[in-house]
Length: 117
Image 1: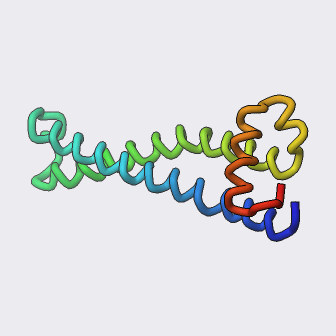
Image 2 (image 1 turned 90 degrees about the vertical axis):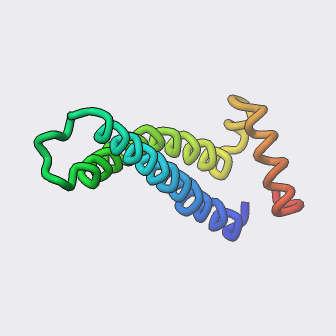
C-alpha cells in the first residue's frame, strides 16, 4: 500500500471509530439520564437530595451510562482497529486467517481506491 493509503487508514482508525464510540456513549448516557429521571419521579430513591433531585438523577444516570458504554465499546473499537491494522500491515495473514473479512475489505477498498489492492 502507498503512503497515501496508509494515511487514509490512519484517519479511519483515529477519526471514525473513535467518533462512533463517543457518539454512542453520549446517546446511551442521555437515555440512561432520562431513565434515571423517570425512576426519580416514580420512587423515593433520591428523597435525601434537595429540590434539584431530577437534575441530580439525570447527571448521575448520564455519567454512569456514558462511562459504562464507553468502556464496553472501547473493546469493540480495539478489535476494529486490530483488523484494520492487519489489513494494512499483514494482508496475507489476514487472508489466511479470516478470508471472508479480507475479501470484503479488499472489495470495499477497491471501490474507494480502484487498482490499489
